[in-house]
Length: 306
Image 1 (cartoon, rainbow, N blue to C red):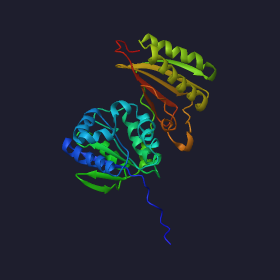
Image 2: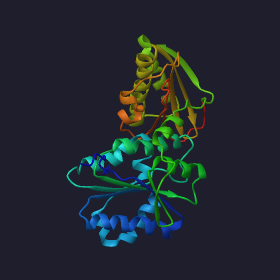
Image 3: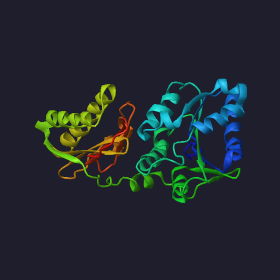
Image 4: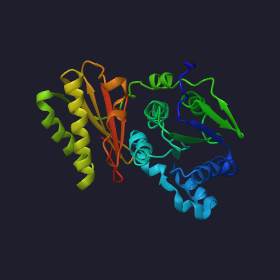
């Protein structure tokens, strides 16, 4: 009797492409094969690739669920719960096929660590699931470091039409490598706080955001995020902290840091962004030594930097 462990039904290859021809050759047959097998298919890629695929698929595009990843996945913390799991979980009675391109030329250096961590965490999030997720990578437009990370986060890599097992596959190593403290913020207004002062620091931060021109729903979203950041920082990270706010171009930024640099242990050791992610139109970054937690949100053009 065989005691070999059954193969994992989850399949997660990276697709390296160079130019539109290779992109189409690697993605369109993947979609058509899924449709022929009766599998639900989703495509979440940047806008230009989305348009290209719709054109190549023709009438078959009507059977595919399309998402612009630059919008649906602009916040890297939303990719697993809001894009991949949202589609797969709603169709749990059949094998699901997804194309997801979370990393493209133009992703910022601040966004990239969260993106690559989520590529690594996809393997745990979908382990044992009847799901195939194909992740295209622009081999001409992305740095060699990004492609090397793709080898580490994907057990299979497709390059020039050949599918090979990745000898560098080590998703846990990637998650650990990018769990780094955030870079020091630029000039910012800072406010120290304790658990008893959470309400006061939240109102202080919101007033600063108002002074920078935020209003309405945007301001309400940021008030919620500030409350989350400061509360978790104080309650789970030592009882006190420091909140800082500043701007980066057209982005309003907030950071909460615990005084003692303690680590917050999330369930099963998972980064916070996997356990919970606020569904608002802003970008929420976390680093796993979560004495640092940072949120960024797009605002109206700002003329002044705090």
